[in-house]
Amino acid sequence: MKENSKNITRRSFIGQTGTVAAGLTILPGSVISGFGHRAPSDKLNIAVIGIGGMGNSNLKAVAPTENVVALCDVDWGYAKKVFAANPNAKPYWDWRKMYDEMGKSIDAVIVATADHSHCIAAASAITMGKHTYVQKPLTHSVYESRLLTKLAAEYKVATQMGNQRSSGEGVNLAIEWIQNGEIGEVKKVEAFTDRPLWPQGLNVPKGEWVPDTLNWDLFIGPARMRPYSSYYTPWNWRGWWDFGTGAFGDMACHIMHPIFKSLKLQYPVKVQGSSTLLLSDCAPNAQMVHLTFPERIAPKGSKIKYPQAEVIWYDGGLQPPKPNGWPAGKSMNISGGCALFHGTKDTLVCGGSNATNDPWLLSGRVPVVPKTERRVEGGKHEMDWVRACKESPESRVMTKSDFSEAGPFNEMVVMGVLAVRLQGLNKELEWNGEKMEFTNIGENETLRICTSNNFTITDGDPRFDIKWTEPINAKQFASEMITHNYREGWSLPDMPAS
Image 1 (cartoon, rainbow, N blue to C red):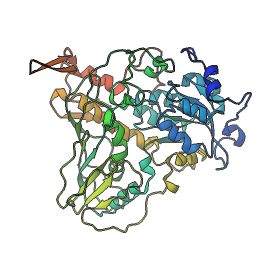
Image 2: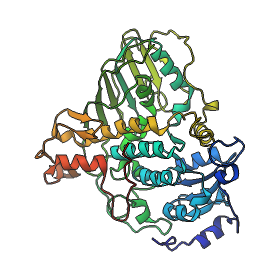
Image 3: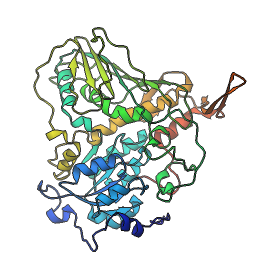
Image 4: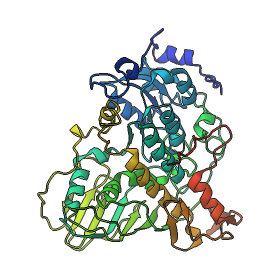
């Protein structure tokens, strides 16, 4: 892959946006301070991959105290202002070339690309011994989540998923109240988001000429090649199955994190998905996912039990029914959604994606409980990761969304996405989390999925032109979504044995 494979060249681009410091020699912190624990004042050398959207927010969070030494993006038009604002960071189209050229100079990597390329960029960084921060959802598939979890443990790097709400006080309080028994046992939780904010339920668009400032081949990365369209990127990729995970994958990582953590959930055992019209390439306008979790063993000294739990998700404008006692006229949509914990003694309401949203009880009571959760100063999620990067593996305090937790949590989220895509089987799916497989899909079961849905009016009469795939082997289809077959030229490290 040639670095400057488009008409715009790095030289001409930098001439317009800034000047990279010539001859700058950058030593990684491990060379300066030695391996292991480092003084908080030591600066990390950080590379950021995907800087046009959330990556720029992550960059701004770490730049005041750390060295941002390299920036990478496949869309230099979208990312132009970010490149210009960071002239001392070396610019790249391709993160693989960046790793080759600057790997020895980099301490840590932030990955904020489209979902489908999170894992490959992050896994490669981890195997190089780089601390890694990855935007949510952590990965695009179940297998990828498991891989990053195991790689992070093997290489002992500091990790963090970019669900910044997990560093906020609201999540701390929700966990403390629930685990202190303030609402009793929880057997049911309902959650929703008002997203998508981007278009979904779309037919595959016609191809367009690729802008000179975009490297389409690099954007596609490990996914299957398709003609470029401005419908796909920037940002709108979230609604396309090959690149994103729809509203569920986007927002569940915020809204469902306190559910996963407070109730000590791991792998669900059953799942059902349903939605508005399901298309083969684009996520539906609205969907519902019903997950069943088995009873969990309560830790010694626990004040509550952890019975079988049902977790139900809604998006696209759908909401659960308002529970008895809900204040008349009050919206349940708190910063993009909320979660309702239905306990045997009370109902806890936990707001959406904003880290400052504090939980509240439907009874109106305000619990006073011991503070058992670690607080992050100012709720600074990225800086919690920076702090962990500078601690030795032996004494490191785990970040608020370390891959050891974020990995299994993300497996739950992306498996729920699969339930929506497999809804044509018309049954509750049984899931073996350890083996990463659905256990009740037969070898010969098939399903058909709508490929396009066109509507016209002719002489006042509605006409529908709906096209479907040929019958698809459901077991093979599920297996590919769980693991992903990467495009030629792109591959992941092997899964660690333990």
